[in-house]
Image (tube, rainbow, N blue to C red; front, top):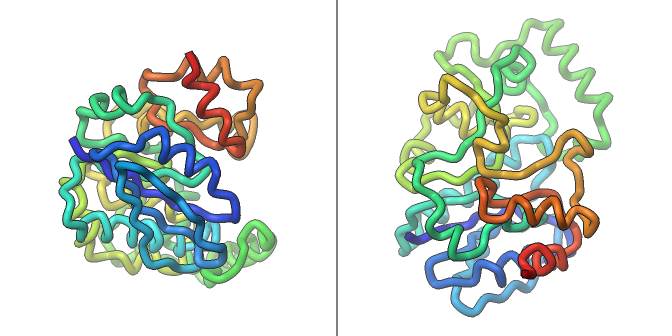
Length: 270
């Protein structure tokens, strides 16, 4: 099977991503990379995988720019001359938890996409209006509180006249490429404009009919090993190598978050 690994990248250090590319370097695994336009484009190389840099936009955490960067990745995979069986989304600080051989034969379900229990708070990510697409949300959390209060005060509900049920889950996923037409032809993309944290609602809302009745932890459903108890998320370091080694070639395709590229060699060192 052919795999397309899509990467949402940012910053001025792409050493972790380069190590991931070296780990998965294979004619059946290609990379599609969106690197934040605010940052310098990295020099990434592979021997057998194709590396495709796609047209870039400025991405601001928490805003709808994250959704539209992800949409660009999906569009470029779909327009590619290659036909891929599985599409994966990772960040530039994710690392593999599978050997290349195990990764290539592991995926057999159509959807590895996390869903969380629904809440009114998640509904408001899309129903409220957030004019924040060009600011660093982390530096303006008080502004977000004011915007939410104003939306409540004026009874804003952009979904009121639409038969849309917003859903939420992990924004990282692995899916069969057969879902791409459904995602890219979604007729209500405007609901993601001027939204908040909508990258965690994007695919879940579009593919809501596939939400399982019995939910597991959403990152586990997406085949991702992410620890939100020790951090936001926790950054794995060398002291966590034994823990990460225990997860190799199990049900987790990737782990995040990592800043030290040497962890990949250490985890897979027999």
